[in-house]
Image (cartoon, rainbow, N blue to C red; front, side):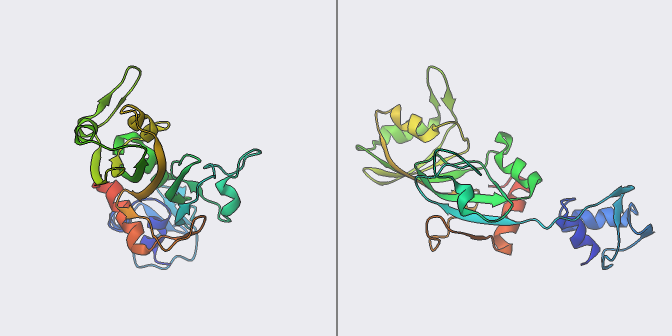
Length: 229
């Protein structure tokens, strides 16, 4: 494997960033300074610190209803029973929520995707118990202030009288249910269809997962790098 790819996959930066690192002369292989094209065949050090290569994995799952987002549980069905890879969930979905859930062992990316300061947008299909009025849309897009909490402005696309597409940048406990309850609406079904600019693969059956494509991985990383969602 090329030295620049080795460093990039080890989480030291993008390909262009690690090339600059290599050019600066702080990267060695078995004590010898090498260029970006060098094929790694020994121990790699950056500023005297050993770089341990770990191949990162990235997946999307179509989470089924009825499962909690956990690796184990003694009471409820849990997603860990459906996943054979050693990866972590990127955030969580409530037990009765279905749809897109990302999984990875890339700790740095996971942290950024779940860090509130990045305001990663998440879009849901929300089926509700009664007519969704235009005044509700306006209120949500201006942000809701309640007695004990508040919610940042959301984006709303009304599909039918009782079905909306809702995009939020937070992940507060039961957030969408609480937002709808503000208008005396019950949530009948909730499905996440996108996370950042990654969309749910609708060919995935509930409970199944697949690796992200190289294009999807690059989109996700670039979104975080440039905070461009």
